[in-house]
Length: 305
Image (cartoon, rainbow, N blue to C red):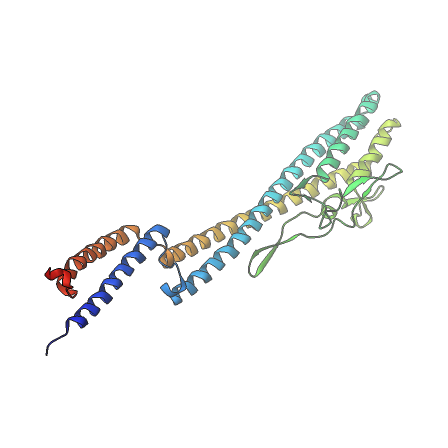
């Protein structure tokens, strides 16, 4: 059975165009570095790529939340350490003030207490990223300040709120030390019962006033400051635990992100070396096809002139 030249020519042109399309497709993959440049390249593959990209984007959001919380808690821990140093110096001063020999130094001690109070107020009102470290969930103003009578009072609604941060799809983590847990849990004057508690700021104001009046600090106020020192140590432990937990979660999330990136790369990225070899082979066959065209395509009248 004789095959017509027109059929040979048509089949040849189909094969030639297919070869040219494959060359162009490989060139595009090498240029973009992606095996999937349009949905028709791999309908199932594009679905997997979109799903992996969504998971990666969500993971990046959680990582950003964790990193912000890490910095927030590290700044909080530094502030607590600063308070701890101030209170340790204050307790040393109390030891000196109790000694009757040092009565003449009371005005100087009062000034030191005033500086300690100022430092504590600054640390209590410190912030990170627009959020007050010890202001609970109210960031509208500095949490602590003086009222008209010179007493320290809250300047925000409350400092007991917990800041909750989303660190995974199913988990939120408290990422702050509420000021109410730190500054107000000290015994009131004349008692060791923390249920009738005052705050460390007004305790120091009373000590300052006593020293200015020539009186040594009351035993109850000394006990209150020691209670506050213990409370700082307790909250430093809490902060350390939170930081360690955030660090561990960050490492886990980093590992998961790397796994997802590996899966996405396997699904989408081109093996450039393999693609170049494939391109060279396809171009060789394309050039060979051009040479065969004179044998397959029908001749025109010009071929016989």
